[in-house]
Image 1: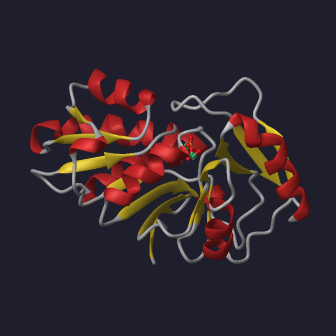
Image 2: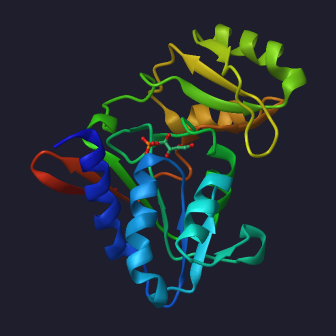
Length: 219
Ligand code: 5RP
């Protein structure tokens, strides 16, 4: 199976976690696009969705699925999203699609985070994928130096501005052995909007697309 077929497989498999009669939190990316397309087949049975990006909102609405603002919602039973990397404890790197801030906000409303990913995303230690960090522009040079002090190389993602109007740094060269501690540390640096480590909001379940089918990892 191709990587895209594996993404489609887990996108469809995630429907089993959608609670009928309720809202569902929806992430961003090519794997989530498959989930959104599958969700359209049961749109009459859900109240609607809370979306993490302009792109996902457009796709949901294109299918005729109602989209509510995160600010209108107190809780979600489930949030479904992809990942750039996921480790053996459900901690993830996210933000390859530049939607990390809204993804963390919507994930924070949810009781359960269902990660959908093809098997290439499963890693022993996070950090092979350059860590996305949404930042306030005036703080970027200082933050680049802070990451250098940790052994990382931070580069501004060229031509990219997030849905919130901010630039992104991609930080390579970090071996993230303690994701919870590093997320807490970086989140405190002035000028950091959101760091793409999802450890406090790690996955409760991961549906991993493999050549043998969908593997369910429970954390
Ligand atoms: C977007 C994300 C995505 O979930 C992540 O980049 C995975 O994307 P894809 O499903 O296209 O591989 O965090 O900000």
